[in-house]
Length: 270
Picture 1: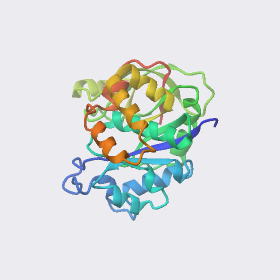
Picture 2 (picture 1 turned 180 degrees about the horizontal axis):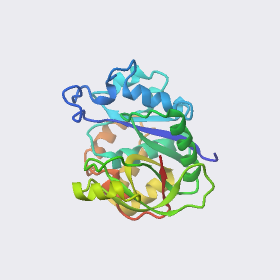
Picture 3 (picture 1 turned 60 degrees about the horizontal axis):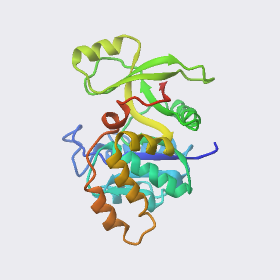
Picture 4 (picture 1 turned 90 degrees about the vertical axis):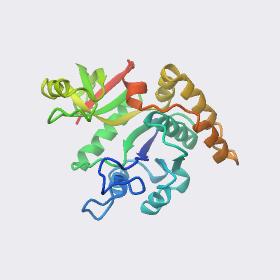
């Protein structure tokens, strides 16, 4: 690959979905759930063959950062970026993109991943990440879609467009439309029409494309994040970062960016 490839792992969840096992102070990515390793550790285990430890960036909260560092001591401590306050996945991903550029000294490709997925076919997942990284080098946004097994109102959906002629071992389509958390009737129809996939929340794209879309769709967030990007080498980065971050508007990557039309947005079905 011509550009460095980085993983941006979002590990700042508040821990409400698996209550009472998962709580704010002990969110699900830190739980073992009957395994000998936490969901977060498993997430790092399955990407480590692709990404060097120094190319793994973890976005998290102050209440969790020390334990995450302890659980994955091979990741440089400076690669753990602490959000002073949760602002949603959109600012978190943009922050990760800028830090990847800071580490690489130029443009990079990032795989935006989560720390709480359970993935059984690790080898296939790794192949998908490599293929998605290849596609993202051509300034494409690559979204990983999961074939739905039932109609769920808790997931977002992606409608596939035309089949891509790009030579690949995977089914690659253009993205026709994103639909976030529909009603039950709509979800049932989407799950059975053969055209929709669950939105996994995993996106692979170049840092240039990330910032291009933020500048176009969330200009205020873009401006604030650019200010933060200029602070990475400053001695007083923490205090200045906090003051800028707290003024950023909350937004998710799905509502803030993906639901709007993006040129060269591709779906890889898994």
